[in-house]
Amino acid sequence: MSGRAISFRNVTVAYGRHPAVHHVSGILEPGSLTAIAGPNGAGKSTFLRALMGELPLAEGSIDRAGLSIRDFAYLPQAADIDRRFPLTVADTVLLGAWRKTGAFGGADAACARDARTALAGVGLSGFEGRPIGSLSAGQFQRVLFARLLLQDAPVIVLDEPFTAIDGRTTRDLLDIVRRWHGDGRTVVAVLHDFEQVRTHFPRTLLLARHAVGWGPTDEVLSPGNLLRARAMAERWDEEAAPCGPGNRLRA
Image (cartoon, rainbow, N blue to C red; front, top):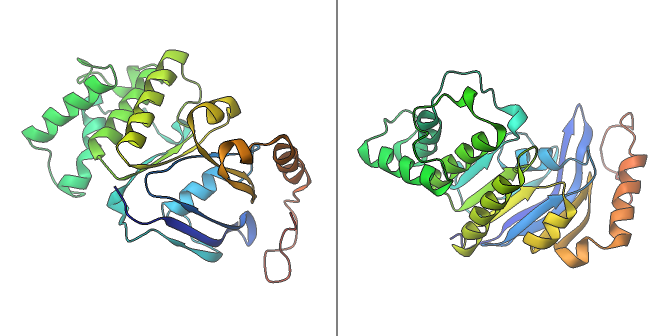
């Protein structure tokens, strides 16, 4: 759906000038299905937040191929979402209509119909009036995927979408991811399960603050690269000198 690659050139994201993502370059081809994998604390979520424009870059650039923020559908980690807010399932799904209605536009009958269709697509027909706080983790994740379906964006960005949910829900949501890919959308997801990555994601960025590899999954997730990523994460010094010219991580 997007005709140009999203490109990353020398991307560094830092907190207090200490890099969380360090000099990463590569591309997301239009219509690609890419996993971002790596050890805990490797900068995976930080990288996604930089892609979405939520974090400034300390160095480098991201060329979003002429896409606006409305062209990105973003699912943050479930832990970042406060489910105590008194919203119904329908209210939550309809938040995905902002790409069509604008930030302050109201949802019309067509949007409400599309929301019901999206809920049916994730197996939650009849859940419209339930408060989101009453849902199981798997049900709530289905609601968030319904919101993404309603948003209908050409680029889908998922941060740990299958963490702490049941196997059936994971399979159903992976079916939706495959459908997005088949539609020609660009999909990128942070994942921890390497077997899940190998089975379902043809391309992978293996990240350990630094890009260990970015390309076909079978090549990137080689035993040597996985050992290298683990070693890089283990030797990373949080108290290292601030990032700057001449002080770059050697892979």
